[in-house]
Length: 141
Image 1 (cartoon, rainbow, N blue to C red):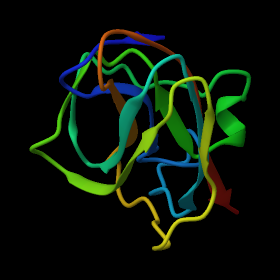
Image 2: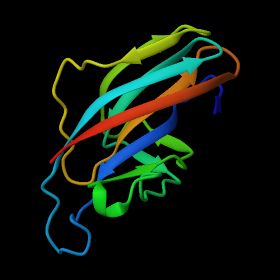
Image 3: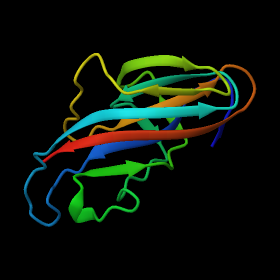
Image 4: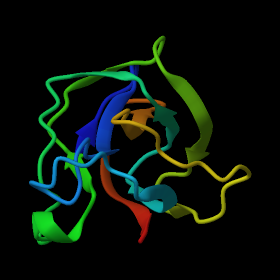
């Protein structure tokens, strides 16, 4: 994806399904935790990991290449904007252009509640940045 300087842009979001297993009419009781993420960018950028922020144009659905019956989560990659004055910033940082940045250990165990999304958002520090993003969550069955 390509992002410009200025406002943060959502890359990948995850949220818990309200009902799981599918068709059971039972509230989703599976714990979902943030696992890790990787960012590779062509130019310097900043990132934020946000919980519960309002997304514009989000369309949550099945996680790609995973049967709906095998996951208690949904994902979105179609949101076009994120309201960073809503929700909570869990952590943030910077990525040096042309280098790989990863976050695999989080200072606080973050467990997703309800159907609030967790979103990895990025913005270039200057000009446009071409980015490859990987964001992982872990389901505790």
